[in-house]
Image (cartoon, rainbow, N blue to C red; front, side, top):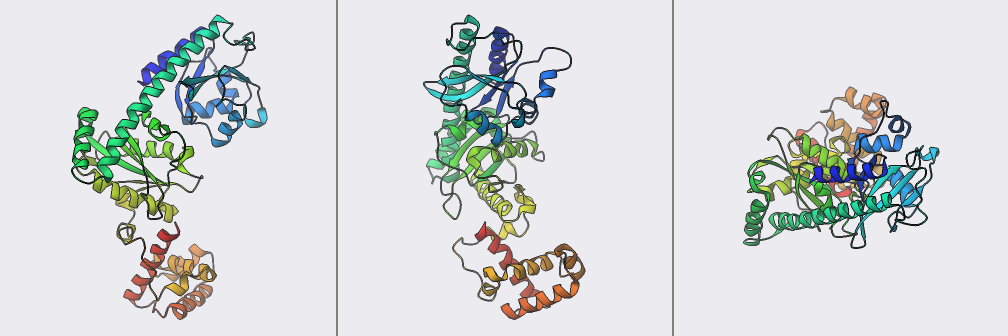
Length: 401
């Protein structure tokens, strides 16, 4: 279907004699027309367009800047002036892509000498513009059909991951039939958490159009705190080649529905062949996402195989309370002491490494560790006491995350 979008974008470029770019409503790049000339001057001079093409997405700031001109409500083409301060060196003409009154994307054209004479004051008076908008409507119909298909696959995936038997088995059979041969190949299951459920029902599922994503769904109350998560099923070339899943995770983490920047995290389950073990994979993916949120060195995308002790900690009951011995150390007034103890234990009890990692003198480290022992009544020379303290500090990250 990506080829169909490219063909339609090329039709708009030909009709208006200017290169066009198609983005979805979340400003993710779908297709773009070729630039004329040998040096691609326009591309090089406009960092917003360059970033959109090279990174396949515009930033949140760029999105907010363009949406301020009312593009999400527009029924007809809009002319947007340049603003070098925003990185928009060349103005834009925006053709809203709609289907049944709902905006699904935007076609962008650089408002340079090619389009200087295009009159937008009387919508569709120019036959070139009328033809372009007709093509944009065809793009809208395609995007709507894709979103509907994605939503249906997403519902099957959600049932497979969360429903009870026999609904789970029925969903697996239906998903296998819908995906065809891909259902027996190597697959990765990705969790993005938290995920916002607000907005149009098709918002999340429409992202499944990106390359390699077989199905996608939002799962309500997937996290211990009641937050939702997104599940994405991704085709792999081989079980040991997670690159497509990592690329999908990066795009999904930049979605407006993935929460505030720096808050959302993604987890990747151990890849499977076929659909039979996806419920177990979902548990792994959620655990890895929680670990990535709790321990930023693991993320923003954490693989289940690489989260270490969090494989055990995420399986603990979410409503557990902290161990009584460690509880005093977890008070907000002792945040610095807790961090010191955790870094010391992360460094296998090597004082020199721990002091360097914390940026403090070794004597300061010893003073703080002595305070930790006084607060917890634990002996940091005792292996089991160290284990209790270390696991308790890591577990507290999951509760805070």
